[in-house]
Length: 300
Image (cartoon, rainbow, N blue to C red; front, side, top):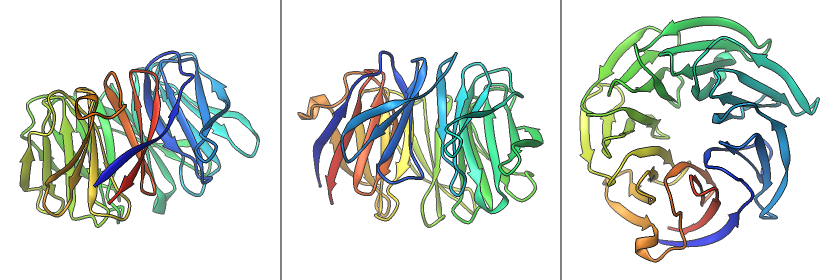
């Protein structure tokens, strides 16, 4: 497995916390500790524009499939909705008063889920952007949301070291996965829905059976916190990003480590914590505290 640096995008003046592909092919959005959400062209490897200004750090970006929105969750607790058709911010969802760490969509229900440092989740109607529901998951921060491919389960990664699983249908609690010794920063279901993988500040990656919730494998994946886990959409691999400045590629079938992308391995990689990943076909895009967006071409 080979990795080649395809592009480096610079312009952010502060750490980048999130990256999200647009519904429109070839467009990437990034945001972080700057005062705006940035749009980039992947084919042109170039800056396009600042989409809209923000008054607080952005920890989450989301582009819901089937809706013309770019949605940003901020440190202040505000959720900002930019409408691509109107080309402006049309809604500011005011419910949480603590930072928003993740935003996801249940497509079959046209519902938007927003997870907050206050330990609760708000549920919004994507058609009207009205608040539908609110429920408490933890007494502490929720750092991540993962929705199973069949949209039957939701897994929340929590600061209390647990992964809490809920039914998407009625938001009833079905199980709590324990084993991490520090805050869970990231959760992800495999594309076939059979696995749920969690990564935490304890530098461990845990692989769970998504149905029985039994632990299948514990991987001492990194030296420091695992910030993000991202499955390849079609190939049997997943990538992890860490505070230890590295990106690692793992096999889904054998949980073997196939590639390390880091300065120590000779790659022109990130100088500081790698915070978020996204797959653009076989290209892996990473963002970091070092203020850079890097694109990695993968040869499997």
